[in-house]
Amino acid sequence: MDKYNKCYGIIPARYESTRFPGKPLADIAGKPMFWHVFNNAKKCRELSMVVLATDDKRIVSAAKALDVPVVETRTDHPSGTDRVLEAAQLLNLSDDSIIVNIQGDEPLLNPAMLTQIVKPFTSAKVLVTTLARNITKNEAGNINQVKVVFSKTGNALYFSRMAIPCYRDVEDGGFFGHIGLYAFRMSALEKFVSLGPSRLEVAEKLEQLRLLENNIPVHVVLTEHESIGVDRPEDIKMILEILNRRKDKRNI
Image 1: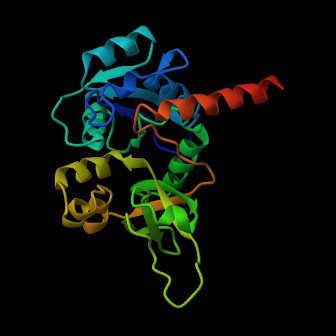
Image 2: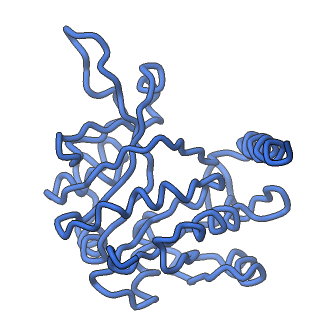
Image 3: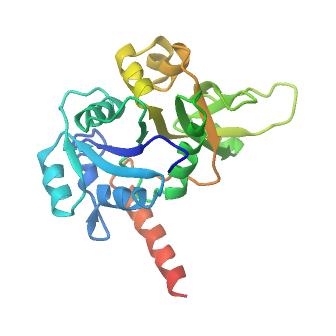
């Protein structure tokens, strides 16, 4: 921890969801989904604290019953990032704090990913970080899998739902899929929210483009770990299957 400023994990958890209302409370092996995210996140040694941020009293009550630290936020936030900022402000986190926005719908989160995303902050020049991994050509063709291209020094050049880059006259040189996990310096998080949606952000429905359009560099960290999110109720079955396989391996 001495290498970093204080690092804090904040898990935004909104009750209302078009595809999956009440998703943070979805039962997974006897515990709500947010508990699994929190339980994995708190295993990251670089995080001084992990907190749930929600606008729903049902989630607040469930969190308190499970001894999960929780902050109640406003109901009118346009994005999870706005909710994370309000939670950080309610916690009176300092301007030099590092805030990790942890997706609340990834119950299989690997704590090593959180370690990877905060490591670049040993450099004072780093303001925002995110993760990416190698993906196949078929994966790159899926508009729901966001792609990223970055410079030799690791700064993002562009994020897109389209397959980037477009290989015209050479063989497929590989694609990188973006993982929606972010870490911000507190000052960069405040700046991001204050700017409001940008043109490319609105066009691609990707809020990270707001940073690039406003010349705020995003450092991309490559990871070998995969991100597995829950979008719909039927995804819970897949999560349970993975958890059971892991349990079976431990019992061998």
